[in-house]
Image 1 (cartoon, rainbow, N blue to C red):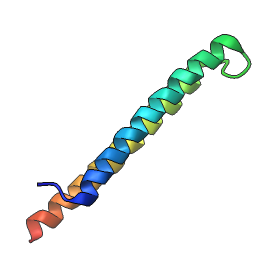
Image 2: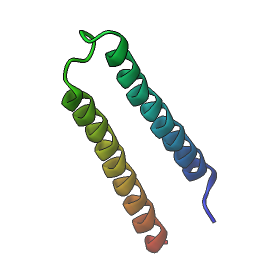
Image 3: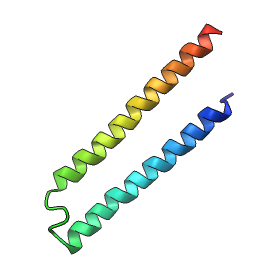
Length: 73
């Protein structure tokens, strides 16, 4: 049974990932129409990968702390 805060956190991170994916796609479209916006695709890939990695690290720490709190009770 997940509490309300965890539920909202999961929902929020899901929306964040969707928005990040939209931004990533938008970057590709922008590059097709105007080459000067994103000359280097690696920059987009790196930024996207870094964002996802940071999110995963934060989620991992959050759930680890939640688990520790749960076992302490």
